[in-house]
Structures are given as C-alpha cells and as structure tokens.
Amino acid sequence: MIDLRGRDFLKLLDYTPEEIRHLIGVAKSFKEKKKNREPHAYLKGKNIALIFEKDSTRTRCAFEVSAFDLGMGVTYLGPTGSQLGKKESIADTAQVLSRMYDGIEYRGFGQDIVEELAKESSVPVWNGLTNEFHPTQMLADMMTIDEHFGHVAGLNLVFLGDARNNIGNSLMVVCSKLGVNFTCCAPKELFPSPELVATCQEFAKESGAVIKLTEDPEEGVKNADVLYTDVWVSMGEPDEIWEQRIALLKNYQVNQEMMSRANPNAIFLHCLPSFHNTKTKIGKEIAGKFGLEEMEVTDQVFTSSKSKVMDQAENRLHTIKAVIYETLK
Ligand code: CP
Ligand code: NVA
Image 1 (cartoon, rainbow, N blue to C red):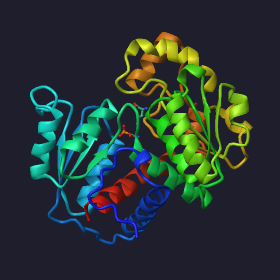
Image 2: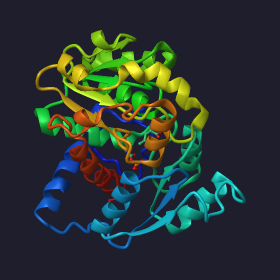
Image 3: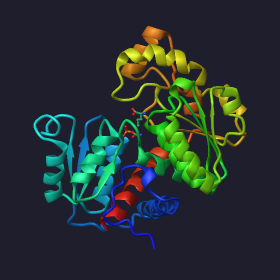
Image 4: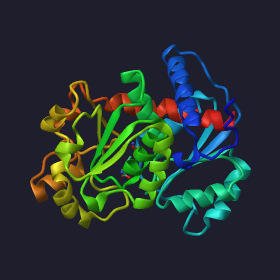
C-alpha cells in the first residue's frame, strides 16, 4: 500500500520506482475524470502557496488549475511582492506559510533552497523547478511516453543538449529508476556530474536500465525511441553564455536528419518553452546576433506528427494534481 501523505516532493532521488509509477497511475485516473467532466474537489477547504522566483507558464498553471479542480484555495507569490529572500529568511517564511497553508510549491534557484524550505516547513513542499532538478516535469514525461508506447521500461530515451541542467539530470534519474535506457548526448563539458551518474548507475542495476554518455550525436540517436531536448541556456544563466552554448550545441540540434537516424516510430519531446522559430523576443535577438533561426529543435520537427510536446504539456496538469492529492489527502 503506497501512502505519500505528508511527504515532500523535492527530487525523484527520494522516491522509489513503485511510488513514481503510483503517481503516474493516479495522474491517469485524474486525466480520465477531467475528460469525463467528473468533479473531483476532494481537498475542499485546503489552501496552497506557490512561490515562484523564476518565470513559468506550465508549472504555475498546472498547480493553479489542479488546486481549483481539487476545490482548494491558491496564493501565488511571484519573483517580487513578497518578503522572501530580501527581508525574510527561508526558515521564517517556511514557518509562517506552514501556519496558513497545507502545502507549498517552490520554483527557484539552488536545490538547497527548496530542501531548506522543506526542512523548516511542517507541510509538504513540492519542487516546481530548481537549477538542479525538475521532478514534476519527469512524471508528465514518463506518463506521455507510457501513453504513447503502452510502457516505458526497455525504451531508449536520448537527451540532446545541456545534459547537466535540471532536465538532463532529472531524466537520467527517472529513467534509471524506471528501467528506461538513457543516453546523454552532449559535449563532455555539459555531461551530468560523475557523482550523479554513479548514483544513477546503481538505480540502473536494479531496474535493468542502461545509461550511456556520448559526445557523438550520430551514435547517440541510433535506435532511439524518444528524442528529448531542452533550451541551451536555462533560466538564471547569464545572457553572455549564449555564444559559447551555441558553439557547443549546434551539432546537437534535433532536426529532420537527426529524427531520421532514430527508430522509425520515434517521438520527439521537449519540456517547453522552446526556441524553434523567431516568434519570441529572445529567438529574434539570437537570430539577429548569430544568424540562427531555430535552436535546440527545428520548427519542422517541433510541429511534426512525431512531436508529442502538447500532450506532454497537458500531462503537467494531471501529474501535478496527482502529487498534490497524494501528499495532502
Ligand atoms: N516545462 C515547464 O516547467 O514550463 P514552465 O517554465 O512554463 O513552467
Ligand atoms: N532547463 C530549463 C527548463 C525550463 C522548464 C530552465 O531551467 O530554464
């Protein structure tokens, strides 16, 4: 019997494969309920606080809509407008919010901040993205893969890009726990830390997953079932780093040629937001400066039938709802 009541959700390193699969199962049942317009305001009378020190579309909306659907109240605390960090410590904030709310979401910088927040809080704390990890995203990703292929274990997932960012790290963790073969395809400078690789190798022994690290994109995408990429520069990194990242990662762009080297039934995933055209402020600036109109993925691949990015984005809602419900019910 899996019981997650009162638990924090800070990183998937803290969760067993059974617990992860359980959360995905609950998310699937919430998706059904939503589709059938079946009311599920199971947490009426509870309230949650959402702390966002970085921007967000999907994560914020998924937390808010989940709360509304579950019958809860929500307070959004954005990058400005609260005392957090400027006049009030994490510890004091945690204790104050614990007196008023039943759960706290945190998106921000170091993983140490969300870990401290959780330590000082007496209610569950959920990680909505840190520099190191993005665990709620992983549940949506695995759910999307499972919906498409009917299973996840034994599939080959290749991540191309900045493999030591929150998404690269978290994918290696979740894949190694769930028996998904994980290939990190990136220049050596952007490989995940040897410590995290070693930890994941241990999980992989248990689950049967194979973890590979390669600098060669041609070799990396061979036999891939899932090609996954993310932005080349993450939130919180300085703008000056763009030039260096483009030089390092331009050969890892997911384009038609890359897709054609993968398995014929391979799908494309991306956590979003994505630079696949010049319809964004940053996209335009990069095109002007470096002559690159598409970055980590081409518009052709992004908009193709192989791209499941919108299913993935929708599944953020159902999976985040599962995390809130299972930890607060
Ligand atoms: N994928 C994701 O976390 O998106 P947001 O930054 O919009 O929340
Ligand atoms: N690596 C990206 C993920 C966004 C969801 C970032 O941190 O900006």
